[in-house]
Image 1 (cartoon, one colour):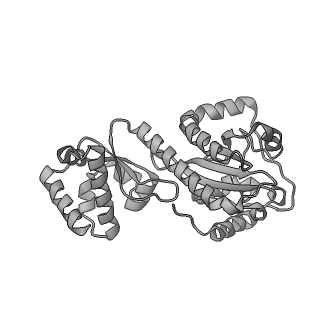
Image 2: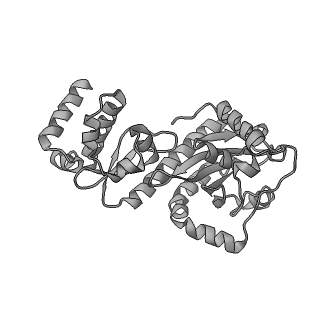
Image 3: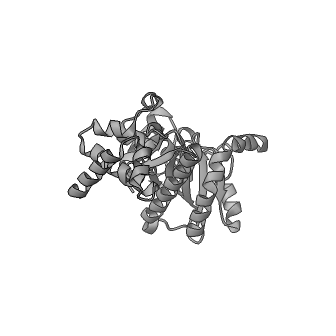
Length: 301
């Protein structure tokens, strides 16, 4: 998994807090918490995300429940939608507003694991003294962005350490687990959105997103994840034209596209139990063309 240098993201966040938001770090501040009716409305709107995230949150909670961490799911605005905590942590989580309906956007809460992850759209680790507001410095937050089936930023998966929790020795291991969970969640959301299409992998993950493309029966691209859009430089307008994937790849000579083509071929073969004819049909190319490409991959490998 990829993780940008934390000091770069931290510096950019502190700059926004000072010059864009005009936040005073020494002012005591308490996050906004929605009312019960507002929480019901919010959760109803995000029901597919909450339901898809539940298994990943349970898995993460099993991993960290003995380490003093809580697992949080937030939407794209920074509102907490769901959480997994130990029963003995309820009171402390309420005190720190690590609760459903609480708002943790960067513009009001300052630098934090949820809000800064949303502002950057990248994984982030915010340790105690790295929070902009002094009142949050007993906390530590690890956040990874969650991307929806159409490549949009949909929220954050977060691990937050309560005061007194030692996190630095295993922060990178926890971040890797978070990114893996986010990739699985995105994969599930993508497959739920395209249940009958062929799903092809274009390469390794980018942050917490897998480069996946959904192909129709003719091998045309009808959907792509965030990582696929970044890797292939695809936009909604291009995808709306439903281009044939192999035609796009054949037209490019850059090494990254050749590598993507290799991933696509291997993915199609795996999805079709190594049946070359079925794989060729799913890619919208002839059996002989796929055979030729397989032979080229064999020589290059």
